[in-house]
Image (cartoon, rainbow, N blue to C red; front, side, top):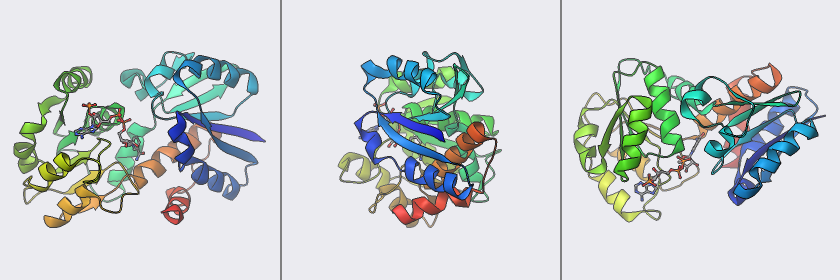
Length: 273
Ligand code: NDP
């Protein structure tokens, strides 16, 4: 029996990942179980020690541990090295190897809609860990321009310096959206009830005629302010479920060597909505 966990703070209890991975394990005929496992920051190091001795098959890492855990592993691979953030742990004997599948997961989600990122001018709103992964994903996919816009300018500038992208404040967002092809919300705010200021600001933003898509990496919000904005400009909108499914598929591939169709990951999410 292969055991998998997703670790985060108490919010991990609401994660859709167990539903998704358990369904895919069953469909793939793999005897396994994937569980949500709350870990407080002070217990993170001992949770890693436990992973080594338990013989776990693999794990995901979610808020707020993605960066902290990166310093506790034996090795980082691929995008996790540049991001300094890990969302997937592969267990090899007693060694823990950190990967970041949010980066390829975001790209695959966008490209699954027929949007080719190469040569697009893109703006990413937000400066947290997810914004970092999205900005790196866009840069690596060959975007012509990647600009990160956020309310905490110091944080935005650090992100931009680290990843060699552009930085700006929320005050510049109107000029940016008027000139961009792809707009991504990577803040944690998706509805007016979460921030009336953000809703007013977004509702008043312009979009140009060649804009291809608005993406909100959050999901499960019925009154999504980014969706409403995209719809008012007749622009395609995508929420974060596809990214969640694609990053999960990448993680599953790292753990098992098998990459089932993305629909196998999406189907359990759609019935959870
Ligand atoms: P963080 O907490 O690290 O970052 C949140 C960001 O949102 C920060 O930059 C913060 O600003 C900004 N923000 C919050 N409130 C406001 C506001 N009122 N106005 C302007 N900016 C605001 O979270 P993560 O980056 O880890 O995750 C962001 C979201 O993405 C989460 O909701 C998460 O669930 C989702 N996510 C989805 C994934 C998927 O697969 N679909 C994968 C990963 C994340 P400041 O910088 O000033 O603090």
